[in-house]
Length: 105
View 1: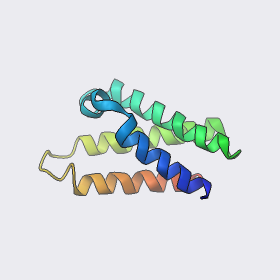
View 2: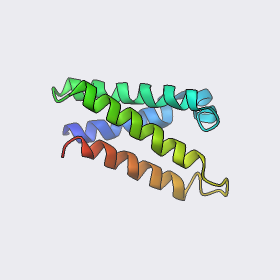
View 3: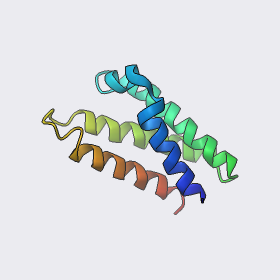
């Protein structure tokens, strides 16, 4: 499995399972908690990059943290019309995958 696949696995594990219920519920309401989520997510992703020896910490960390924050904040401000857990979730995840892929361009 290549580094991109490990990054996607780490993303899915952290963005859903490891963030915890508290962050999962309240990150949409409080930018501070969204920032905590984005920073810790970026650190997990940087750990995977470091393991494979391809980490450029300053560039990669800030890119990942900022884009994750922006995407999640955008999704959290969508109307609460049941699409948040369907259409917008798929768009959110696709955008996260693209931001990770940009690291390899």
